Length: 64
Ligand SMILES: [Zn+2]
Image (cartoon, rainbow, N blue to C red; front, side, top):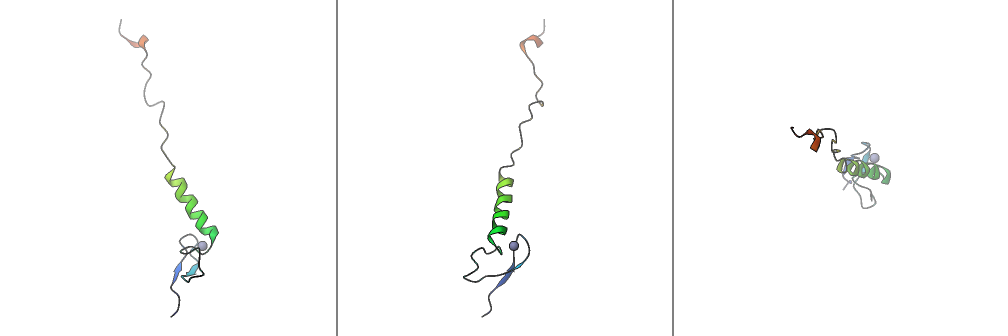
C-alpha cells in the first residue's frame, strides 16, 4: 500500500505520511517551526490600547 501523500501546509511540497515522516504534515522541521511561529505571532497579536482615544478630562475641566 503506497503511503498517503499530502502537500506540506507551509511550502506545498509533497509529504509522504509514513512512520518516518516525523514532521508531518510538514515536510521538515523548518516548515513546522515556521508554521508554529506564524501561529504564535498571530495568537499574540493583541490590539494595543489606544491611549489617545480617550480625551483627558482633568479636574480643571470642571465647569466654573
Ligand atoms: Zn514544507
